[in-house]
Length: 232
Ligand code: 5RP
Image (cartoon, rainbow, N blue to C red; front, side, top):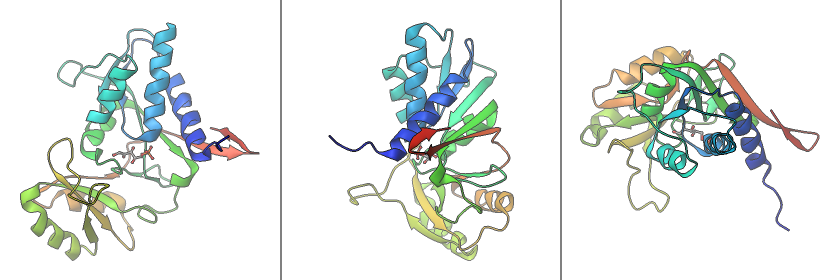
């Protein structure tokens, strides 16, 4: 028998806990990543069982829209609704102020649009994502127009960052975002002021959006293993 992956169990638990908070009649922001994928799956289960009705999802990526369709969640767009009641999304890092680094799935540009509009934004993570300071375990993803990669690299280096072009799994080409752009993963030895760095990076011409999310998170649900059991 194969051993159960504890990280997967934590992601599953926390995804379910977030899906359980969604009420009938809600417009729901659907995040991207393996943890949110469980939330989408559990939302679908609740819809199928009849426990949840009149739900519409706003996906933050092509991946999220594919999953939503697979699990029977009707979708809508920001052109059609004027509010998002609740947003559920993962993160790569969460600091004590609930600021985030996101973009491990190269979806942070659309995620920031949708997550920022959610009246209640819930972040779902396993315990490995909790850090004292942003940037300590994960670089800052920056989505960049392909024709501007060279000057943006130079500008990020001037800010003290070490940018690396994100390559696909087979390393035979760069990762291309849903918007047709590329991603630089930028390592900073220290991020003393996340709100300032977020703004400074976004001011570089050619940058679409970076993965620092400041002051947006309402609730962080953390999956943990306690006494050998996954818990939230
Ligand atoms: C995608 C993201 C994801 O939410 C983040 O990378 C966390 O993913 P996972 O739940 O798979 O660990 O920001 O752009």
